[in-house]
Image (tube, rainbow, N blue to C red; front, side, top):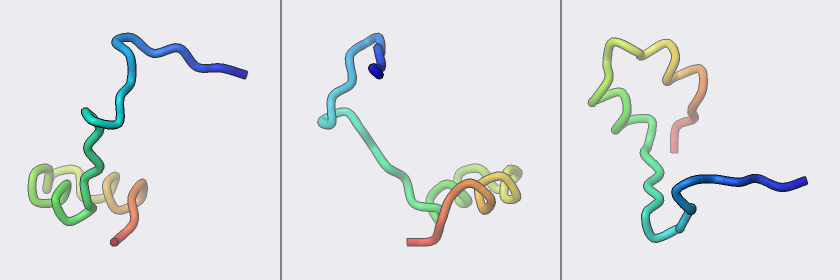
Length: 40
């Protein structure tokens, strides 16, 4: 099995946001963020 992405994926450009940061930026989506992410 493989996965093709365009543009190419690099870890240098990857950002992983915390649940807290997402809730601060998108409070209107609280239910979705809490359902699909976990507290770190």
